[in-house]
Image (cartoon, rainbow, N blue to C red; front, side, top):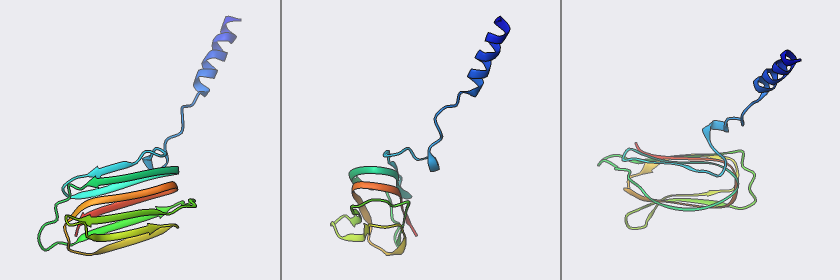
Length: 135
């Protein structure tokens, strides 16, 4: 009887599984922000996620370089609009995005020095990846 009990306990313990790994390494409704002197990125897997971020950038744009911005939105299911802006020290818009569908945008023509990233989303559902670098 003890052997069967031991077999049942071992079998039950070996059949246990933990929670599944997050898709793409992203935890739902928890943004990942990287802000260094060479790059800025904002990534989030949202599920009805509301956010408002005003982030002072550490990005250093060397003279003669342009600002490259890549925005990728996938699995979009929101009914509201998300706004993303990159502005310079004077508050001038460098790049301005309106997110209301799956999209891919690549821009690399601006030479203004970026100072702030402004992101506003209400009930965002999907995956948003935004990367800004010197080009």
